[in-house]
Structures are given as structure tokens and as C-alpha cells.
Length: 615
Image (cartoon, rainbow, N blue to C red; front, side, top):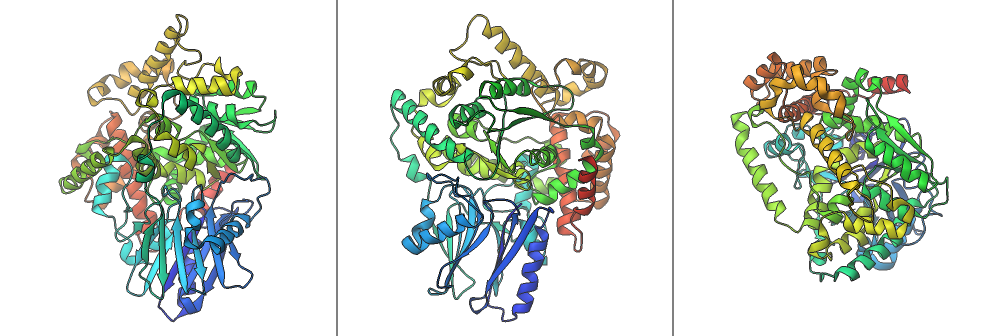
């Protein structure tokens, strides 16, 4: 996705360093609508580059002060209280540079959004590398005796540092158990993540002085508000925050679902009729409840709405799309997220900025999907100790307050892969990660933390016409009644049936899968979900998955249990945990092919041709 790269070095051979920087930039030039640039201060050993979407007003961009002594490369967005309507390419960097000139290193504490950047101050002979307070706009780094290299994508470091082209065992334990890597490590040896809210300063050295400008403990110490006071503050904050995510010179479209979180955004957006196009992702079989409810919400707000369907070309091009999914995300997303790339590439045709309700459940209501979801039998004995380490680490993370766990662990680590896929195609904005909303979430009374009542009340107050439209799960204001309870129960039962038939399928039930359950599949599949990878791995994608599993066996990967792989190859049964493990093993095989093996080309040309053919 768009971002930054850089090398800070004592190597006097500037031509060699320049070539390395070009190699890093080439690794991130994924799309024809990307542009890139570079900036160097050779006497300070500082070489920085950026990749951006050509049309984006929020480019990673360069600003230099009037004296030419201070420069800033900024990637991402700062969404402040002032309107974005006058924003233009480069203006964010110029504004933030002005903040630095006015306040010094404290400039970053005023920023709100997902971003990373590099500030180069010749007068201080200082290079400052910084990151947003949640760690959403990733920066990977690797160091040696004479250089410090960094980049928004790990592959940029792997391209110039052969010693990093190996998988980290602790990260493997996390990925194969949870489907994500967490902490400040990456999948790769000697490649780490810059911690959230970091300000690392380099002065005549490749070893930085490290500072953290924010800790969630600052917000954890806030007093809990009384129920009425919290609700009024929430309503005022949503009214103030949401418009800044909708405004701007670039077109914005709403990724609308049938749930509560996108409905709150629609209720607070205050956009004129016809000015905020909406879309909803649709599965291959039918209009799910999301599509139906979203269409009603858009109509009530006077906004256009369309469904973006997952069509047969997704399955025809799945091998290429899966390769690209793993490449774009540095392996942080396994192949069960491939549909996100498919949908995001189509959503970009509607608008280059996607407004989403993602993360509202985690921040406001403490909902979590960050759980172990894999088949232990798929993993070798050698990896079991690292699996136990991952489980213990996760248990430690869960001991934090819910808002801290959601905002500084689950969202930037566990949910990062799908965000990275979407960000490769368009700019993603979520008001639920706004500083003001996250800060306020710590002050909710315990009785209001979970459940939908507060959200339903908020929707009713902000946009009364939306309160009577049922959500995908059958909720609506003013609350349950004798007529709504049966519908909510039926929706819930359909949801659970679909989940159990997909990645929740227990091993003991797979014997009835084909002879019995498959015949019932049309009754519930696609009513709530738009993707069902266990079913696809069993049916449409069976040949590809068997081929990739055979590759894992032939390669003798030390983390995969050969007996499990052979049994799966010989079996026509597939449980939910087995499907999750299979998706991750296939992703790791693609990591080896495209990221670790020297000289392996990125899967760009073949995928571009495939996507162009299906456009």
C-alpha cells in the first residue's frame, strides 16, 4: 500500500544507497495509479522515498520550509477539527511541517489519524521517524552496524537485506494459531515494527534515541461518566467527529452494511441528498441481510446505493488474487481474506476514499474476534512451544482494559491484514478510531459497555427515520416487541447456522457434510455472510488448494505436520479449523515463493492482466 521507505546510513557510497532505495520503492509500486518520489540529504546519510496514489489529496508528500533546512515526508492522513474541504496534495505535509516549526518535537501529539512520517532538520542535524498513536500506519525496520532501514512494507526490507529472508518461529506460532502476528515483530527474522506513538530521532548515528509520545494509560485514568452524561457526550462527539471523515475535495463513498456502526455514521454525516454514494458487498449467491438493510438506510438518507457482487471471475482468478493478497500484505493476511482485494478494487471505481464502520464494535462495545482459530494437528511438534507462547501472550494482552486491547492490539495487529489489502486500492477512513471517540470510550459506565441499546438510541436521536429500519440481526428502536422478537430469533439462528456450516464446522459433523448438510445449504448460506471459504475450499477452489497443499508437502516445511497434510489430501472432509489452518499454510507457501526465495518476482503482471480482463 502507499507509504514510506528510507535508509539512514554511515555508508559513504551514496550511489549504492540510492540504488537500494530504488529497489525498496520498486517493491511497493503495486498499481498503475501509484506514483513515487525520493529525497536525500547526503551529508546526513539520510535517503527517504514515498509511494502514493496519484490522485489522492492525502498523498504521502514532501514539504520543505522556506529556508530549505527542514523537510517533512508525510504518509497517511491528519483529520483535525478544521474542514478538509480545502485540502490539496501536499497540504497535509505543509501544515504538519508548520506545526513542527512552531512547537518542535511536540508537533506529533496534536495529530489525529493514521500516518507515518520522516522529518529532516539540517539545523539540528536530526532525522525524526514518527508514527500514529495506534500504530495503524505501519513502519517496519531492520538495523545493521552501518545502516537503519525502514519501510511501510516488510518486502521493501527483504529486498535489500538477504539476512532477513527467513520466517521467525515465534511469529509463526502466532500466525498459525491466530491468523495474525502481534507484538512488535513481523513474520520475518530481524524485521520489527515501530511501536505505536513512536518518535525515533537519529543524530549523527544509525542508532536512534526512542520516545513514545502517548500511552493508553493516559486515557485509562479518566473517570467513568454517569450514564446520561456519557450518552450526551457520545452524541456530541459523534456529531463533531463524523463530518471530518466525510468532507474533503476527494470523492468519498460509504461502505454501508446492515449493522449499527455504519448507520450511526449515516445518521451523523449530514450530507445533502445524492452527495454520498453508498455500496455494500454482496456474496455470490444472494442479497444478504446487509444488502437489503443498507439499501433501506441509503434510501432514507437520500443517497444512492449499489451492491458490489462477488462474481464468477473471483474463482477463475483466485490463484492470482491469492498470490497478490499475500504479497500486498507481507503475509499478514492469509488467503481467506482474498475477497477484500477483489471488492476493494471495484469499490475504488466508485470513489477513492472508503468510509467504513469497521472497528466501532471493538471500540464502543468490546466485541472481539481475536481468538485462536486453527487445527493444532496441522502444526509440527517443533512449533508447539511457540504456539503455547502465542497463547500466553494473547492471554496477557486480554488482561488490559477492553478499549486498550481493541485499539492497540486487536485492530492494528489482528485486523491489519484486511485493512492493508483495502488500503492498497483506496484510502480507508473509520471515525471509530478518531482520538476523541477512543478517548471517550474509556469513560462508558459498565452497564452501557455491551449491547445495542445505546447505539439504537443514538441513531434515533440523530436521524429518526433510520430508527425504524431493522438491522441485519433484526434490531431496531425503540426496542424488542412481540413482533420483532421472533424475527430477531430467526436471524440469529440463520447466522449461527451459516457460521457453523462455514469456519465453525466441527470435525465430528463433517461426515454428514456432503450427504446431508450440502443439500440444506441453499436455505441459509449467504443470508449473513458474503464469503464462505470452507465451502469454497471444498468445492470451487478444491483443485487449487490441493495443489498448494502438495507444494507444502514437497517443500518439507518444518512447521507443517506431514501426516495432517497427507490426510487432508486424501480426504473429502474439511472442518472449519482445518480450513483456517489450510488457508494459513497456503499463505505461508506463497510467502516463501514471493517474499523469501531470492530473485522471486512479485505477482504483479499476471494479476494485472487477470483483473483487467475481468473489468
